[in-house]
Amino acid sequence: MPHDITFSPLCTELAAKAREIAEKHVRPSAAKYDRAQEYNWEAAKAVAAAGLFRTFIPKEYGGHGAGLLALARVTEELARADSGFGVAYAVNALGSFPILVGGTEEQKQRWLPLIARGEKMIAFCLSEKFAGSDAGGLSVTAREDGDDYVICGEKKWTTNGGVADIYSVFAVTDATSKSRRISAIVVEKGTPGFSVRKVEDKMGIRCVPVVETHFDHVRVPKSNLIGGRPGMGFKHAMMTLDLARPGVAAQAVGAAQGALDLAVVYSNRRQQFGVPISNHQMVQKMLADMAMKTEAARWLVYQAAVTAESGDPKTTRIAAMAKCFATDVAVEVATDAVQVFGGYGFMEDYPIAKFYRDAKILQIYEGTNQIQRIVIARNLIKESLELEHLQAYIPREVQESYEEKGAAVAAPPAQV
Ligand code: CAA
Image 1 (spheres, rainbow, N blue to C red):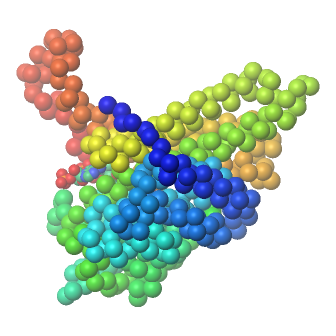
Image 2: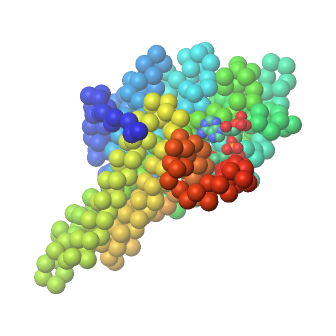
């Protein structure tokens, strides 16, 4: 059953503040930071001053406790002006979720208030050069040594790397175990042996750094092991992604809405054949399709946020659906927005080209859309056990053959 989507007064207030910051501190300088590949500290400071980093953090750790729907609304508003700044903001939630879902009380008290106040940024180090979609195939190791862990190896695609002060790092603590191989450990910037090396030169979201993080015998106390129990890392990573994917989906909705807004404004002014091009039915069709898709994505994202908030076991599927659908929509809408702008759309003189460049990564990070579809299908098949009563409505011979051959025929695939 769908969950009620209710915007609390606090959620509405935070979203309004985000829109104000987006128009004042994000949109006007988006092109500048994009060209320079520089982080927009001015906007980040405004976000901190407005208390927006507190949005998703529970009250007991210095946050607003406004939940995932508010996080989605804030992210959407920021991304509407600049998708890159949207992720620069949302990645703090991605980095914090391992602590929130798996951390001890002491760890939550130690790190979350700093993030809530915007005094420290956090990043998420899961992917490696040879472990992207296969998140279980990590090679970075964390070896126990007395009261410490010693971390060795390299992480790839760390969003906010360098800007962040705290890193949730996933590493192999027991190479012999299949299900308890990985643990999540917090590493703070400045720890000897930790460095940020390759700052990537990207096609889009250029205002947020994506880097390689290197760990050369980085020694951290065991008290930094998230949850205090080794082997929980893969579960914590998956639970984190379930909570974070509605956020990346919200970024996509913001990006789609931002591109649509510009396309509508342009089409009302651009004259061809003696009338604004918005009078031409082919343009109207494009605008209508863009608006329908964006609105459908928006409500799926809100539904995913409230589902994840409720702890519903269907969260994994709905979060993956929202991420996949909304990010596909963002790419389609940004592509059509460029088309509406015609030749101007192809030029870097105007922001619409940046919307197009920024959109593509949405289909790739926080789990490619191919992985999302696998996650959706696997969970749909699992959940179909709830529909046993419908067996009476499928062809009898199919049911009989299934019973003869056994459940293995219908079991979901074990491997990706
Ligand atoms: N919640 C809790 N536990 C979960 C879970 C979930 N959503 N999904 C899986 N698990 C558990 C399973 O129950 C299982 O537990 P047991 O061993 O106890 O039985 C265990 O995890 C292994 O599960 P699977 O067999 O399903 O694992 P898999 O190896 O087949 O992989 C996958 C599943 C869905 C493909 C996963 O690897 C995945 O999500 N890959 C994509 C990774 C990803 O999204 N990376 C993005 C990095 S972040 C990024 O891009 C950030 C950025 O910079 C912005």
